[in-house]
Each structure stands twice: as structure tokens, then as C-alpha cells.
Length: 359
Image 1 (tube, one colour):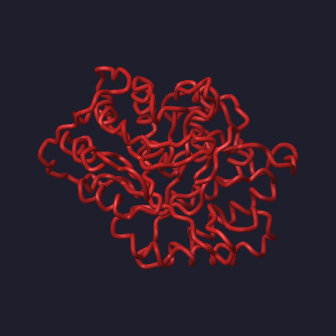
Image 2 (image 1 turned 90 degrees about the vertical axis):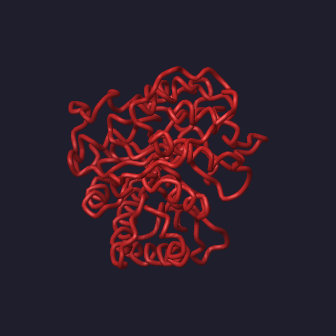
Image 3 (image 1 turned 180 degrees about the vertical axis):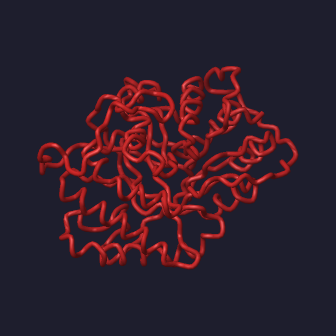
């Protein structure tokens, strides 16, 4: 995972509600004014879920005292899910999956970071759960990287070869995992600040999808994986062709969503600040050509040990207005942000199940 840093906070780009912010954006093919060539601080991830009729397994008791009060509210649709690291304590994960399936409210999304077993367990528990895989691959550089080497600053003519090398480095692992994976996430929080970087990333995403489509059966990709609070509107306008192609060929848009401000930690506040629901900027640009969206990382600051369950329920209810595939809570299994801040939501699984209506 990339080390996360807070973005420049921007106003919310569209009103909360269904896909109808019709007066906010005017699609254009180029930005109205030249974009700065200096780096900005920024941070911000399914085929359609099949209508599979599954006989739920026997009810599973989920017992644990909630960290905070869980409202006695049944959210209309369970869009809750988990981001799962391949290491660390996953105690209660299987019970969480089984409880939601037994309640006929299957976990919507499991995003795994190099953890094929957790994806398999999710699919075997309930085929309606969508799974996404990500794991960096080496392509000749010294270390595994979240994004292709070159920082999006290569010449335009190099893009096809860079995309080919990047994809071919991941195919061998993908082939071993695809039985239980619906989508493969190919980058993580790309930080394109300049016009050149944005144009290269657009060409790269298009080339990657075309390469994935050449396989039989084709690999379905989760593209972009924006960090919370990105992209900017002028970048979104340039990215339209990638999302139109994704919608036409069964790929999806991946985003990270939620608060990056400890003083405004709720999803409601993040929506006002422009770091939640930012994907809605694409709806007026694409209309019916919008691909489906998966939130592959979602967070309230410090929410891994003190979540606000009422805010979670509001967030997932609001998210359902957009027919989003699911929201993966970051993260099950340990991840360190540095400075002694280690994240693992393992102790929250019973309360999360209760908040999702999986009783």
C-alpha cells in the first residue's frame, strides 16, 4: 500500500443524492487554462453482481460488545465489505462472512492484497460477494511498486511497451488466482499532478484494458484506484475515454473514499470536504456510459478502533443511491502508517456485522 498523506481539501463536487448533479460540470476536451507543471499534494477501486439465488447456510452467532452504540436501523442494502491484507490476525473473518450470508445480506465486496485464500473463502461462503485482487509486481526495477516505473513522465511512444511489461509481470499470479477473483486492480493511488502525467496515465489505462481483453477469457480490471480527494475536474475530463471503454468492456472504476482529516473524521464531513463520493463527478460527464464503481479502501480516521456506526450506516445508505458494488473497509490484517499507527479492524468484525444487519 502507498503511504497515505492528506490531500489538499476541495469543496464537494456534487450534491449528495442520486446521479443527478447536472448543473455542476461542463464536459470539455481540454482544461480551460494551462495546468501547472508542479506536483500537487493529493491522495485518494466489478462485472455486475450476478443475481445468484443462494440458499443461506445455517445462522451463525456473532458475539462481541460493540465499541460504540450501533443504531437500531436496518440499512436498505448491505454494501459493506473489507480490505484484507495477506498477513496478520483475521480472527472472526469467516464468521463475519457466514453471518451476513445467513441473514441473506451477503458481504458485498472483499478486496484482497495478495491473499487468495481470503478471496476463496468469501466466494465459497457466498458467490454473490464480489472479489478484487491487488498485488504489486516487479517489472525490472528493484522493488515491488504500486504504479509502473517512470512516474507517468515517459514519452507517449513508450506507453504501449510500458503497459505490456506491467501487465505481463502480473499475469502469472493472476492465472493462479482468477477462479476466485472477479476483478484485478492494476495500480494504486497514482499521483498524476501535471498535464503530461495525466495524459500518460490515460493512455496507459486504455492500453492495459485492451491487453487484458486479448486473453481468453479476458481479465476484468479495476482501473485508477484514485486516492481520496482526487482527481481534479480537469483530469476527470481527460479520463472520460478510459471509463467509457471500461463500461463497454466490463471493467470497473476503483476508488478510495473517506475522511483524511482527523478533525473531520466522519463520512458525512468527508462528503462536504470532497474526499468522499468524489467519483460522482464522472456521472454528468459519462451519463449511461459510466462503469460501475467499487470503493476498495474506505476509512474514518481512527475508525479501526473507534468507528462511528451511525455514520457508517448513513454512508452505505447514501452509497446505495449510486448502485455502487461495495465498500471495502480498510483494513483486516495489519497495516502500518508509521509513527506507531497500526491499523487492523479485526476486533470490530462482530459490531460491523451487527451494523450491517447481519444478526
